[in-house]
Image (cartoon, rainbow, N blue to C red; front, side):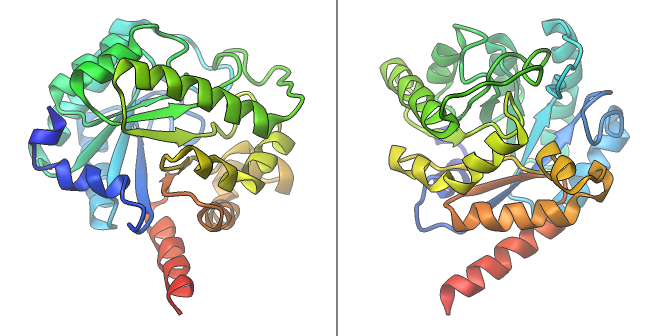
Length: 281
């Protein structure tokens, strides 16, 4: 169990209200993710990327083997396992002290990933795609990232509709947190799901009112890195969206974000350093 390992203090830091914000580095071992698809599909490539992120000061790494970009191809559970398990095993072997999050919505993938050395489950579906997810997280006593999505990766951006996106996401969190509590899961991180079944305006409304979710008593993860809310607003490609991402990350920190999930670790650490300095003076 995670609480019996050397990672107890690292995980405790996530839930410490006085802790500095953390950087979660993205590692997609997929051929088709929206920004870095195909870059890290070999052991040599994902190990080098992990090494670079560690050298830049990353706090934890989020490994994903199922592309959840809009319109992404669905893959089988076995294919996801065949991608993610070798990455977890090799990374744990070379970097035994690294905190690993696993990005999956499948309970069986979550379980096998924890057995292989994962410490946190990051579920884009908030437990709505697999009814066994909450019981699996409870069984293994690992922290859980509860994200909101409308639709599926294949359909979510076709025509997202909300009467009030902020209150609807808030209500979703309330309901799911109640279910998680019943299942015995008490270490939960909230992710509003920027870009997952939301228009550009929906995304910015959630960012503007991010602090509202602090009422739920959980750390907040902001996954804004190089997303279309930047690209579409500024009419640029995701290759040119680093500056916009840093601005959004700064705004997210001001509004209560505890974890920044990013492709660019160095820049995110700089944003946090400046934010923390301003707070201290």
